[in-house]
Each structure stands twice: as structure tokens, then as C-alpha cells.
Image (cartoon, rainbow, N blue to C red; front, side):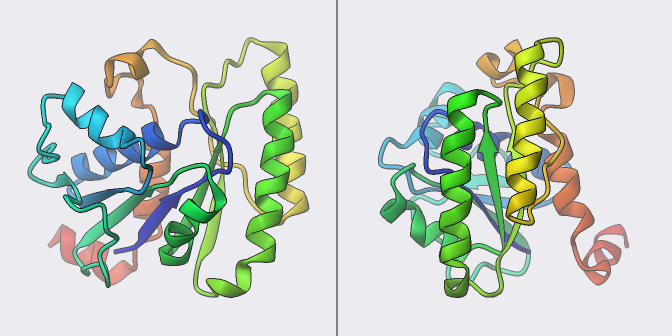
Length: 208
């Protein structure tokens, strides 16, 4: 199974929640997942504590890597989901380990500048991870009835297209996030996208 790195060079754009909720949906779909917290602030561990799992074992299928190290190599039966810090040096190990990279972004004007700079970094360092694919830019905290967000979503598409990257289905703003709730299916679309990319042989084996 792949290693999926959630990365952006700006803090506060939803990397930790994207890693947590995507892995929870993957686990609910029957996939084993290991979360790796590379951020010195240990946001994933804080989330696990809030969910009543300070030991990092959230469910039978979902756990945090106890030492914060990326499994080398990832086992064939597991997804590895990596949360990264915003500092470029700190996130590079996660990028180099990735099969897929997901770039969260909030649809706001300042975020567009940071997004363009980070996608340029990915372009400039692509030779260091020839097997990795940037799965897409993921707009989060999106409010459809806000005109400013709709306009920024168009700009997200333009910036992503300049780098040959897809824009994934936006994650709407929801109070469910503050409750760590699965209500509303937040981030389910990203998990489904990853499952759809699994080799047919693995999907058939799971269905058997």
C-alpha cells in the first residue's frame, strides 16, 4: 500500500486534520493505516489524546507510529499517512518517502501565494523523488456560498494547472471538524480516491 504525505509550506492549512480524517476513512473502509507525525508540535498525538487514545492506537486498523519514524519500507498491507511540519527542511523526509503527495490549501488570497511557492518547490525537487506523484491540491474549510471562496477556488485551479496538478474535491467548512466527527463525510472523497488507485489485484484480494 502507498505512503501518502500531506504537505504544505504554510502552517494552519489543515495538514494534521487531513492526515487524521483521511486515515480514519481508510480504516473504516477496511484498510490498515499507520499515521506518522513528523511535526515537532505533535498535533496528531494531541488529536489522539482528545479522542481518548493517548497511546496512539485509535482503532484496530489505525495507529500512530510510536517513534515518529517512517516505516522503511512500508509493509504491503498498510497505508502510511505522513503529517509534515511547515518548515521546508522538516517536511523533506516526508516528501522523499511519498508515493503520493496531497497539498491542502485554504481558499484565501494569502494562501494562493504560499501555494504557488510550494508547488514551485515540488517542481524544483521532483528529481529527488522520481516515483512520487502529486495527487492534487486539496481545498479545505471551503464555504461554497462565500463569493470570495468561490473566486479563490478558481485561482487554486489556475495555480495548480500551471504546475500540471489536479484540484481535488473541496472539503467544506464544518463544525464536525471541531468534534473530530466523521459526520458529513469530510475527507471521505480523498480516501475513496486513494482506494480507487489501488492495484486491481489488491482490491480483488480484499473482496475475496
